[in-house]
Length: 599
Image 1: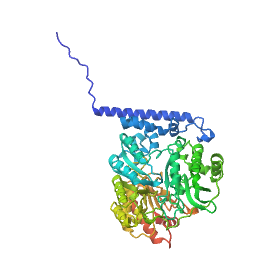
Image 2: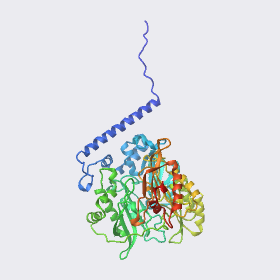
Image 3: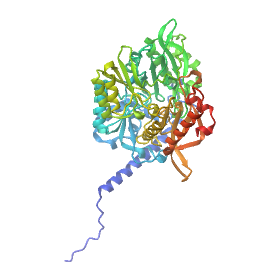
Image 4: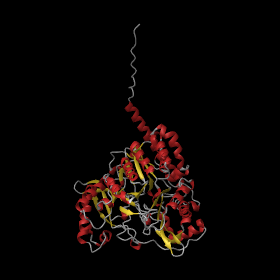
């Protein structure tokens, strides 16, 4: 009997590469379907709400955009249990988009940018195409206050679990990178074991509370605001009552007679003043903010006693929660409500609907002078006779190893605490006079100088394209290049020039209030005819000068390529030095001169 040959084609065997491609295709399909469903639900929610702004106090509770829908589905803080019991065990690809790019922020976590994606693709790619499998983690240090135990804990986490990364942000936080989801529960436990939090370090919540870096030690402070900061943090951070705001809410306190916490650009700020009859308390400011639509805060003209500061804070943030605009994310910050209402109506609503008592009128804080830098760099005597030493990391960049060494230097001098500043500086407190030189020399060996060059001292930079998914250009490296070149060219610069470098239009580095601010964007290279990374320039921003505050001057048609930024700063600085009037600060000069001198 003859046999018959089977001619049925055999399916080729699948390779791991085939499986990976199929998984990626399925992931893309899942993302597209989720995006389609979100758009469908969003359109349905908006159908009869075209003229509404999503103000809860007016009865408008319909979620009007995907972020509001995400929050309405449940308290975002609840994601922690899923991080600990599910995602940290199952891995990055088990995390659904709503948690990954939404609720994780409530615990200080952002996905970081996938390496190798140039700035020209930032606005083109979908969020999941920009995501890396690692996170940035922001650790709260309210008031910028860290014990050495806390600093060492962050430094050890950085060294062991974050590739030794650590950046001091201009919100007095330390940010870590390269965090794996598998390590997050352990990091949470370590951070919380020493009294720190990442809870509500990001998201539509009350963010880290800024505080004067010299609270409790400055010889000339009017009041130590630390008790008021702690009361707000202990009472309200993590409280579901305030875990669903229209957008983020930024708070600042200072006890210094001349404010050192950039009070004009905070959602709420408490500035120390002395009332002629009521004693020491705070002057209240609301509605400041930068980003693409900058607004100066409004002074409400009322006096807040220290013991009721938390009540006033609760009243203001409650107004934001209840009356804030939730329809469009671009109009959801408190500054838009304050602009719409005006400070008089805002104060009336605060007193009538939330406090149920009137606040007395009070004096304004002192204005700054050119001699009052407010960055606390250098060697300064404290009220107790000890000293604090302020140093300037270049654009806030340090490392976990460096943080551990700072703690060792401080401990050897008898100190047990350090401070972070809103200008990306670090202070070592409580240094005995006979140990000051040891601390200064030890920190200098870490490239942390207490008497740096002017550009080193005055440069600020955001995270930039290295890690941030919104960024278009590199910032930290560019800032370091500016410092290196300009401090060599101008070693004896006698008037400070602040340089702020931002990787995108959102102004995390506060470009509008710098002497020279760089806002990242793609610009035309006239030689090649191609779009390349570059900056729009702001000049002459200034705060602390009362009615003379200003967000700076912009030359719209003028852009600077990223690789030409150090040369631009050099050229403008030389023009300033050559044409300034006697005693004229850079900001005033930049407004006065013809455009040719600032191009």
